Image 1: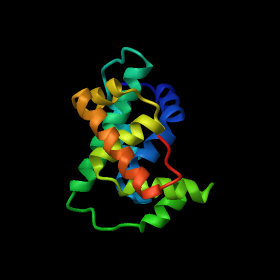
Image 2 (image 1 turned 60 degrees about the vertical axis):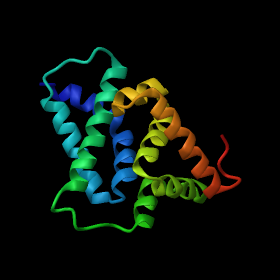
Image 3 (image 1 turned 30 degrees about the vertical axis):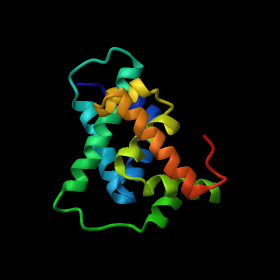
Length: 160
C-alpha cells in the first residue's frame, strides 16, 4: 500500500489527466468525480511497485479507462449531464477548444482513446499500444482514421 504522501504526489501529478480522460469517456461531471475517487483509492491500495514514472502513469491511465468502462456498464448509470455542460466544465477557455473537444468526444471509443492518449498525454504509439493492450499497427490505424474523421468534421481547425 502507498502512503498518504505518495497519494498526494500522484494526485498532484495526474488529477487533471484523470479528470480529462473521464470527461472524454463519461461526458458527466458526477461520474467523473466517482471514477476519480476510484482511481486514486485503487492507487492507495496498490501493493506493487512501479518501474519508473512512465510505468506509474501508464498504470493510472489504464485504471482510469477500466474504471470508466466499468461505470458505463454499471446498472446504476442512469443520470447524465448534457455534453455541453461537461465541455464547459472540462475547458472553459476557448470556443475553438470546445469545438475540438466536442469533435473528439463524438469519435468512436477506439479512436477517442488513441487521440486523447497521443495528443493530450503526449504518449508514443508503443506506449499507447501497451496501455490499451493493442497491436502497434492497430494503434497507428486508429490514429490515422481518427485524424481523418476529425479533419473532415473540423475542416480548417484540424491540422495533421
